[in-house]
Amino acid sequence: MAGYINEYSAVQHIVPALFPYLQPDHKNRRSSPRVALGIPVAYRFGNSIAAALTLNISRGGLAIRTTNPLTAGAMHKVLFQLPGARKNLEAEATVTWTDRGVGMGLQFTRLEPVDKAGIGDFVRSHFFSNREA
Picture 1 (cartoon, one colour):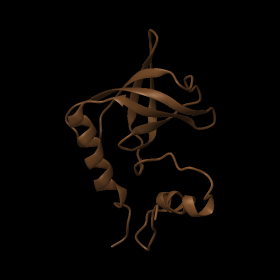
Picture 2 (spheres, rainbow, N blue to C red):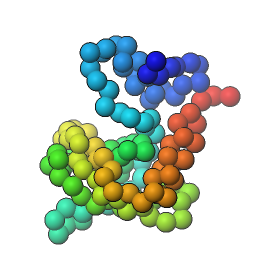
Picture 3 (spheres, rainbow, N blue to C red):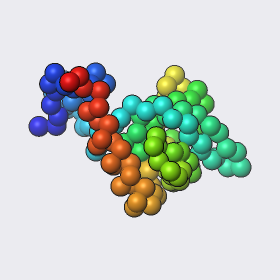
Picture 4 (cartoon, helix red, strand yellow):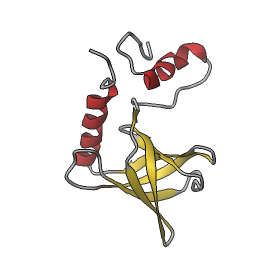
């Protein structure tokens, strides 16, 4: 089973949990859950640095809201700080998807093990945080 939903499931997790059943012939490329998160992120491309807000984050990458997405397949450095963290995280990431109306998705290609663990802990602790008691 790819996922489940119940009365505690956050709204943003319902469609991803049902997707394998709604589109069984379509491969779900996501290897870990996403958490909606709007934090500042800076990314470097060439000699330029841009700033934007994230849309979501997972252990494997993040989505950035931008009307000027970078070229798919290109590798870039990103810098961000998780809520409650004491230090910035720096990673190398590859652009995996772009959509001028939404932004772009980045897959981490180089990330310090301690930072990867910190992102994993953050995602696990916030994945079901929107449930009602």
